[in-house]
Length: 192
Image (tube, rainbow, N blue to C red; front, side):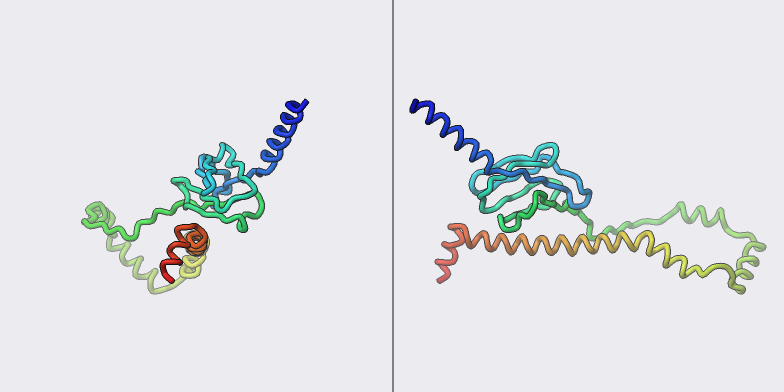
């Protein structure tokens, strides 16, 4: 009888510990799709990878979640920041600072000599420049810029601002985390 009671109690405690976890989804912030194989770990010993649908189980009590994936920025998350069931990761951006190309464009020189206008065409070009006609080319160029390149540049600048804010927040949380850990307390005590 005692053995049966002990078995039932251990089964109930096992169910309670299983129910003390919840499922979280890790998503790509740009593409809005789940990300698989993201390494999730905590200082308490949780070390897991997200499944094919971007989900993983997290215990209700943890001090910090850390997310790592080679194609995304590393992210730290405190329990107070975990709202809802979705965590967004920003893709890593690799940007070249400057590219310089040296050389002559021989193809353009050959094409210019082939397409050299005839004397009649030069006369027509001079006449068309003297009398302006047709649509407002500057307004058309501005509209095209706004519809094509302008949106890309605006999106890129918004993304850079967002990444900068995320990095500042992560650094702030890392400083707070360092102050909470024993090694951070030793640093504070040695400074006094």
